[in-house]
Each structure stands twice: as C-alpha cells, then as structure tokens.
Length: 246
Image (cartoon, rainbow, N blue to C red; front, side, top):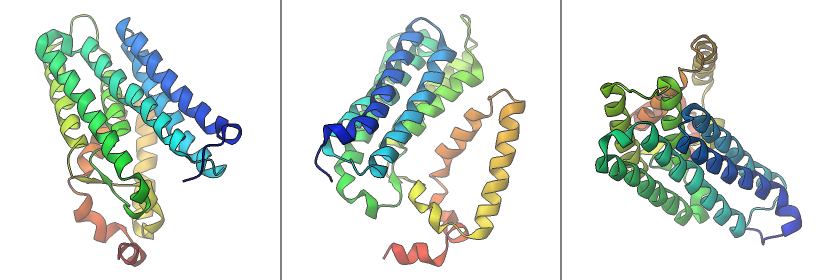
C-alpha cells in the first residue's frame, strides 16, 4: 500500500468526504421525517464510495489514511444513517425494541467493516465477500423506504417487515455466507453475460415503469444471492476462474 501523499490523495479523499457528508445529510433529513430524501442520500453516498477507491487506484494514491477515512465515512453513511432512518420511519413504533434492533444493525455493520479491514492486505486473493457488504445492506433498507414511502400512520405489516428486514441484513453482514465480488466479472462466461444483460435491460425498463419501486426487489435479490452463489458458479464462470482459485 502506498504512503500517504496529501497532494495526490486530495481527489479520492474528496470523494470519501462527500460520502461522509451524504450520510450526515441522510441523518438530518431522517430526523425531520423526510424519509425519501434521506434514503436518496444513502444512494448518493454509495456513488461516492464507489468512486473514491476507483480514483485512488487510478492515481495510485491508495494509502492507510484513505482506508481509515473510508471506514469512518462508511460507518456513518451505511451504519448510522440507515439505523436512524429505519428507526424514525418504522421502528419507533416498537419503543425500546425498535432502538435495540436499530442498534444491532449499527453494531453488526461496524463488525462487518472491521472484518473487511482486517482482511484488506489479502483481499485481492479473496474474490468473494464474506458476509453481506454493508453498502448493500444500507441500499436494501433505503430502497425499502422508497418502495413503501412511509406516511405518519403506517400499517402494521410495513412495520413488521422493516423490523424483520433489519434483523436479517444485520445477521447476514456478520455471517460467513459468500457474496459476489465485482472482481469476478472478468471470469463470467458468454452465456451468463447474455443472461445478465437481458436481466439488466428488463430491470431498467421496470425501474422506470414502476417509478423506482423495483429497486427494493433488486437489492433483495442480491441479499438472497448469497445463499445460491456457490451452487451457480459452475454455470456462470469460465475455467480460468477455477484456475485462479488454486
């Protein structure tokens, strides 16, 4: 990992700072009961989170400082912000239990980030993510808020689903279930690429037709994918993928 160079690192660290600010804005809007806006800021945070690492690699400015700053931003944007968002929008109806469930999500999210950082030196040798990545968990929660568009008087099923959803993604973050990594895309065979392309096109069409409500089902599918990931490998990847694992 490269030494920290302030002049070169300013661009990727700016993206990380915007990630952190997006999480903060999400918290502010959640406390003001503007839940859809708060959810959208979590999506914005993911956008900046995706670009900071890409820019750091492009400019060859990866550093321990950047890793630590990124973790701080992630725990705010994908840990604190979703926990507060789901509490004020749904779980406050459950009183103390709502606080407990929101806290569990935050704690398990922190554990997930700590485990990821502890494996960072050898992460290139691990094509899969162990446990549900915290940005995916945060996007699943945010998309559920967009899907339901909570109002002052919520129906009990929405409250209960939100509570169950929080517990499920919390447990999956600290589980040993393997999730697909973008590093594996280069090993996907041609038949799987065609299928994924068709699915992507159908999703984009449904996204616009449903006014973005299909986002929740998309991320829910990612959450479920961990359970079938290993069973589908032989149909998706080329022989080079298995050679790379040796």
